[in-house]
Length: 162
Image (cartoon, helix red, strand yellow):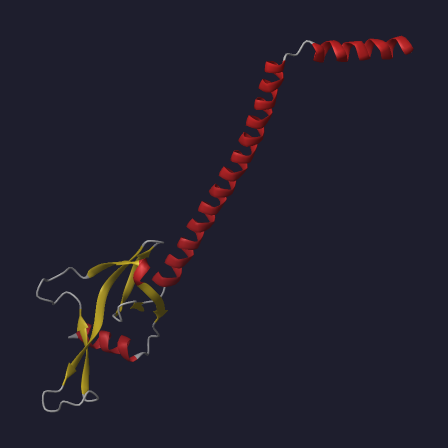
């Protein structure tokens, strides 16, 4: 039994006594590379999961906004657009069948309270844009789904029946 232990100790010492400093350094580098690889692989897996989760969130947003007829999009410049969101992602919103509000001050009085607000169909401007708008998400404050009985939706329906 003692001889077996001595042989095992001799085997251990002979294995490590033949390793040079350079080989030990290479083993250390290999261990570090292995740790970095495992850590990197874990990070890549986490990023993939985040991307999948983000795509599912975008799909949920698309479903939420395309299932209702009209939305109001409030921008950081004070403008509000009404329309149907056909596509939405983290960078932009595609809005179709677009309307916006326009305020006409009465020429008879200079009072700021005497205003007439009109709902204007987008696309009838001088430059004749298509009835589709790509809105940068950075400028969107919030989005609201409009009820079927809202005054804006009723006005849009009245205009489209003409």
